[in-house]
Image (cartoon, rainbow, N blue to C red; front, side, top):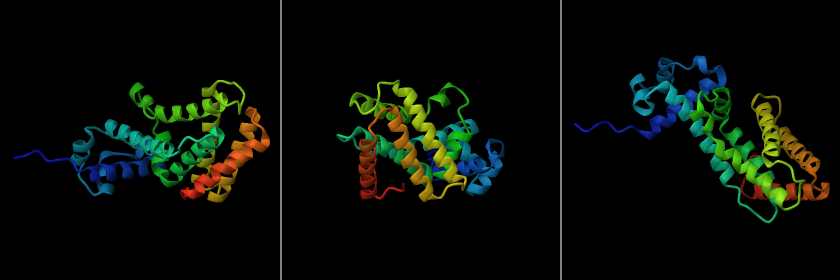
Length: 213
């Protein structure tokens, strides 16, 4: 008898159901029996697909960051690095809005060891590279790109979190993201008019592809 082949659709369902529990109730609420019941499968199916609950938690983080990476990867480089950077912020926002449970789970159920901590690092370095392009183009002052990327990440993450928690409407969150990002870039040394022109270009490019923010 041939071994049973794991169905990727079941694995995706398990990840999304588990992310929903993590996002709304936290890691302690996610148990093997509860997940199997809510996903409409058996506890054995969880082991078949992931091997252990620890591996499932890791798979949730990997899926969350994979979706974030896909959104960031859709931003094409142009001759305007500030517009590109603004679009990366919009892509981050859009990912959080379209994948709210996975987004929350990525940060509620944080890494447990060095392997977990490394998951998703490449998405952060996309942002670092975007900042460095702005520095190289003379649009912002020559600061540490990693430090500035941390500032932008914290800003965008905070706005996404406030929106998902119901404190900001989608429209208000988008406006806050635009204005706060512009002020931050101006604070880094960009010219006010140039900064807003670039952010305007980013908005036009986002609208052309039907982006959320």
